Image 1 (cartoon, rainbow, N blue to C red):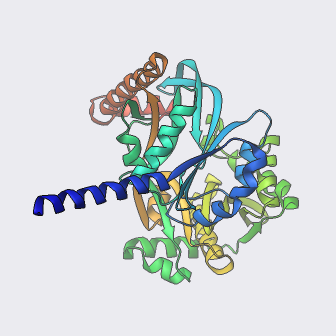
Image 2: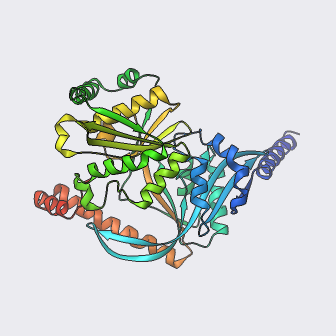
Image 3: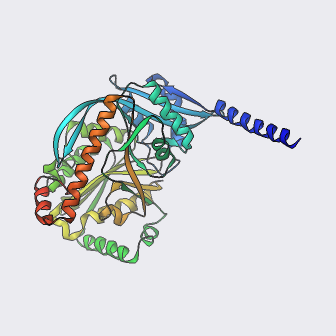
Amino acid sequence: MLQSAAFEIEGTVLCLYVLLAVQMKIVSYSNCSELHTLEEAWNCLAKKGLSFVPSFSELRSAVEPETSKFQILVAIDNSQIIAIACFIYLDTAKKYQLGGRVLFSLPVRMVTLFGPCILGEPSEGVIQELFHTIFKNGDFDVITLGHIFVDTPIYKAASSLRGRIVWRGGRKERVWWLIRLPNSIEKYLEQMRETTRLHIIRDCKKFDRQTPEFRLLTRPEDIDIFLRDAEKISQQTYQWNLGYGIRNDHETRQHLMRLAKNGDLRCYLSYLKEKPVAFGWGELAHQRFYFRQTAFDPGYRKLSPGTALIVKIINDLIQNTDCRLFDFQHGGNDGYKSRLATIGISCADIQLASMYRPYSLLIAVLEQMLHSAKNLMALIVERGPLKGRLRAALRRSGVGTF
């Protein structure tokens, strides 16, 4: 009797698992005319979790061009949408670099995870089903997920896929820096260690004594002013000659214009005696501010214009928006992001491919070989007898300066 009852219980549990599997399904969208049916679910799921999620308007702008090929996968459980992931297909070239120099490049059919994020808070099993679907339906060489938080369901799902190669696009893990915004700038500062808090307050007071002017620009008609003055600041930085910084060009203008028209853009400038000395900008969507870019004129370094501007930005978001999370993106452990952030999460740039495709395997092996060479170079620079000379040589080549 007991054995019979045990079999009945096991059978019931098995039936429940089968029922759950039947109820959960993955629906694919690849036509722009179908997008409007997902807008409400996109906006609802975007507020879950810590990852920044671009606005639905940004999703449209990414997939609506005639040359765009995409696949939006929607996980539905009990008639409820529980997860959304958008994958965009690109024909591109993958560059293999060493010491800041491009050694060679290979043509790659790449799929990128838009965002990069999977909306909602899906389980590891649901995310694996999304990956299985994209691998089954797609003809490509590599999937690039972007920087993913370590020890999260998406990271675990990617790491445990069978028949797939999983590797990191960078040499090592990085830290993603965030701020949970309280209801006042004072409470934000209270979250800091005392020494850090005192340094930030001192830097802000030092800059404020110069009676700076701060400007917030959010409208399409503000874009030309922002790009003109932000580029002037960028041109004064060492990053400019390395190809970094904001540029007053058509592509950047169109991007900012689109964000402004959608109400997602927030640009900030600070001036001393009408001269622009610092800028920062980002996009605000789903109660999260994604901090895109910042720079200050190095001639004013002693006045700490960069720190002062970022604190002004944080205060503006607290007082004048519904923002709940400030997203710095990833960075090192010794920069302004680590100093001003209140949350640090390990992240890694994850890439996937099928181990049964020889070309995909070649791409992965080459990248891992280069990572090993870079690790060896870093070890020599940090610990070798020629540390000082090698660092100086690398800086002249634009390596190791960030």
